Image (cartoon, rainbow, N blue to C red; front, side, top):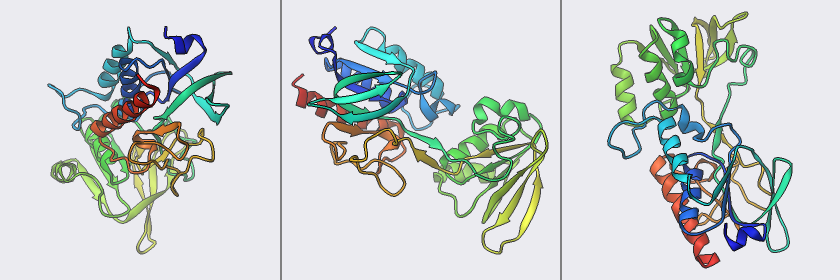
Length: 309
């Protein structure tokens, strides 16, 4: 245990156990920094853990998000990193240190790296929450097999929506992608979806309500251009309409953009000099896993230089 830790001050506290946070913690330990990592969920990986096959991460074979996260967690074993499955509730400015509130205790840290990512937006329509887990899901990899041979709907037009549609198409009779506007997904995903025999699109539309008593029986769709409403029968609904950053735990002095994403400079530093932000919680993040890892390494390198390790 380092001298810094014996004085009850961590060099770095990493908030978030996704790919960015895990990489930051590993790299910080490698640089000799006393490091603690906190993850709000009972497992690491973040949203990536729901991805069945990663196609934007360099590896010999196609690994899943769960496998990548597990490999990174295993790399932390033997390093001087304390991993806690608790959320960071708040970060405040103390006298020469940062005060990190988590799990009923307050830690002192020289630097904090926010790597808390983002959570999936919900539809916020009638019966969505009532039927969550009863036909409404946001993880095709977890729940897709429940809909084997049935018809399902995916709401959204980005990479995540199409990735989920591909997983569902492998087990479901049909997948309908409901898109408000032109697809934002990678061209390769768009071409693959267009070529799939059991995937079709409903354009210029949104889900206005989830239908069903006890379980999902369909969705009510509204055309955003002409206002027409129509019901579509289905057994499952998978909303992937974007994300909201998990940045509320940071102090108000850390500036965000209009969506809540944290603003940083080129060194990943926030408007509070001792706080950094990386990955999906940060404004300007590309969405690519390799960039999440790169941001983690860059932030830690800056911190190590400042702390003289």
